[in-house]
Structures are given as structure tokens and as C-alpha cells.
Length: 243
Image (cartoon, rainbow, N blue to C red; front, side, top):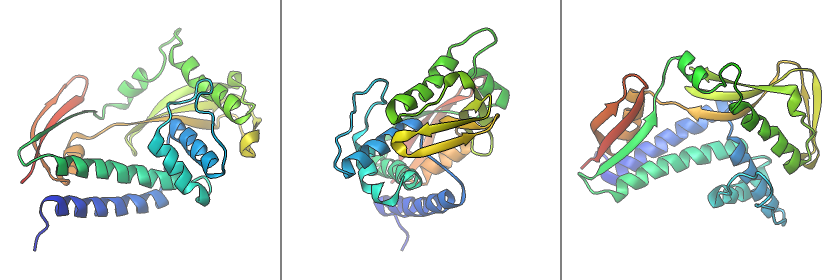
């Protein structure tokens, strides 16, 4: 008997989640900076310490991510586990939307689409003689110094964004300009950085329109219409809940 409705959504979600979990074990995949902060706060709660959520330049606390930090704290850092949990949340979100909507209801969503590497790297890096992105990105190191007792010297790093076509992500790295040792005292961690080594501080995922449509359609929707800017490659998609 074929699966229909919520059962079909649940079936596809379980298969996709299993594939994502296996892929996460095989390919190094990690959360972003804000997520790590929530993980640390959750770990503090799990050890009976009330974290300071209002410290200077702290990211916005996310209660569910803090709770996830509490739950995964017995497994060490738990960052790779949290990646799977985030994927599960994404699938649950799509499944929840599908189950909430009635057949024939619409679901409008916009996504940034894949573009030539040069376009992304031009957009995500400062133009010559300008500095807007650089201070913002180097502030990640200043925040680590305040939050975890680290001794990063931002003057020994420079930021550069790259587009990774294999993962379809724009990744922002801070590159070391000289050999250095960095200590994060509150994490009991020491980093040995050689000149040219980098710290990845940001990921921004870009979608392929066909794959995006297939992923959403597999969870109880069909595509009704799409509007894609042929110059800037930004898409708006209208899906309809299937019967």
C-alpha cells in the first residue's frame, strides 16, 4: 500500500535524515559561530552554571539550540550531533508545514541561487580601498577573546570569502599572517596556527533551483510557479500542498 499524506512526508523525512546522518559522519560538517555559542551556554546549564546571555557582542540566544546544547553535552562538544539535529529540524519544519496546510494551500519561499564563483566572491569581499566586511569579521576573534579568555590578535589575521562549489556554500575564513599559538583558556584549548592557516567563521548556503524544488516536492508539495531573476539569480517559488 503506497504511502500518502503525512505518512509519505514522514517516510521521505526519515530517509533523508538517515542519509544526512551518514554524510555528516563521512564529511566534516560543523555549525556556525552563533550555534557554537548556544552549545556552550547549554553545556554550562548542564553543569549547573548559569550562562551570561547578555555579555557584550553575544549572539542572540536561541532557546532550542541552548536546549540542544544541554542534551548533547554528555557527548563532548556535540557539534557534529547538532548538525544532524539541525537537519532533522529542517525536515521536521517542511513536514510540519506540509501537515499544517490543506491540499491546495500555497507555500511561498525565496532562496539565493547558485551563481558564478566570481559573483559571490565579489559580493562577499570588500572592494579595493574599502573596509566594511573586514572589521565585522575580525570582531569574531575579539568576541572569542572576551567570551573564552582567548588571546587572538586580530592584527595577525585577514578575512577572505570563498565560494566552494562542492558544498555550494560561501565560506568566510580568517587567515593567519604569521605562525602563532592561540590559547582559549576557558575551553582548555590551544591552537597552533601556521601562516596561511585559517579559521572558518561563516557559511552561507546557495541553492540549485532543480535540487531545491525536488527536495521540497519530496515532502508533500508540488511546484505551482517560480520567479527567477535571470541576472542576479535569486528565486521565489510557489509550492502547493499535494493531495
